[in-house]
Length: 324
Image (cartoon, rainbow, N blue to C red; front, side, top):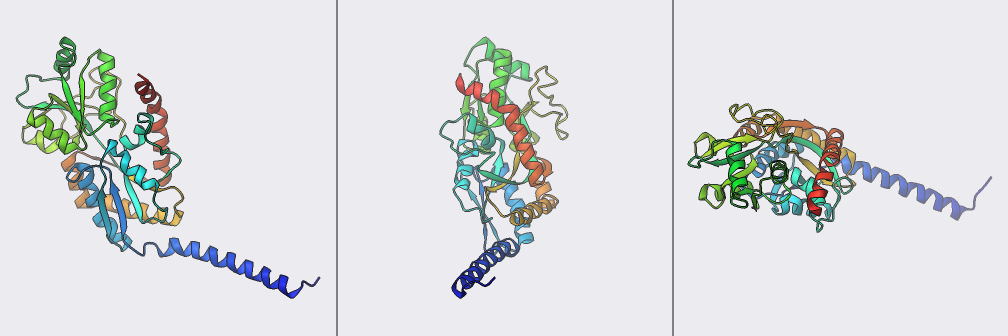
C-alpha cells in the first residue's frame, strides 16, 4: 500500500520529533548538572540543620561537579521553604532540606497548601534529629518530674522554647502536657539558636529542642533532663528517655533532601548518590557530633516510605490537636 508523499513526510516528521524529544529528555538526566544547584534550608543560618547541610553540600558539590548554593528560608517550622520548593521547576536545580516539621505542619496549619506525599520528590534521607528537654544550669529543676510538678502546681507558669510551631519537639510537648495534665506555655522561635538564646537569657524556663544544644550541655551552661528518642543518646547516657519515665512518647524525626514533584529519575539518583557519599565524610561526621544528629541514610524509595509511615502515625494526633 502506498501513501501520498505529503502524508509520508508528515509521518516521518512526527516520528523524528518524538525521537528527538525522547533523546532530549534522556540527555537532560545524563548531562545533569550543567549549572549550580540551589539547596534551600528552612531554618536560620548557624543552626544545626544549616551547618550540617552546608557540610553535606561541600561534598555533594564535588560529586556532582557543580557548586551547590545554600539559601536559608526560615519560618513555619521549615514549611515556608518546602512551599517555595514546590513552585520551582522539577529540573534538579532547586532542591531543599526536609525536616519533620515541614512534613507534619501541613496537618496543623491550614495556610499550608502543599501535600508532602503528592507535591515533592524524596531524594535521600541523611539523618535523624535527637530532641531533648533542657534547663539552665542554675535552674532548681533536676529532672523531668520536677518540671512537670512545677507546671501542674501553677498552670501557665512554665514557658518552654522550641524552633517553631509544628516541630516534633512542640508536638511532643503538647502530648506530654496532655498525658500529665500540665498546662505549660509554648514560646516558638524561628530557629534552634534563637530558642537556645531565649533559654540562656531567661526569657523561658525550659527548652524542648533538637540537639543543637550539645555544646551548651558540654560546657555546663545547660542541663539535659530528658530525651525524646527511642533510646538514650550515646553521648549523654545519664539523660533518660520519655519512655523510661513512663510516657509512650518518641518524637518523630526526619532530615533529608527533596525536590519538586516530576523530577527525572536519573537526576534523583545522581543527587541521591552525591548525598550518600557526603554523609560518609569527616566534615559531616564532625557536624553531626557537634549538633547531636544521628546519621540515617535512606535512598529515594526508602525515604518515600519513611515519610508515609511518619504521616500515618502522627497525622491523626496532629489533626486532633489542631481541632482543639
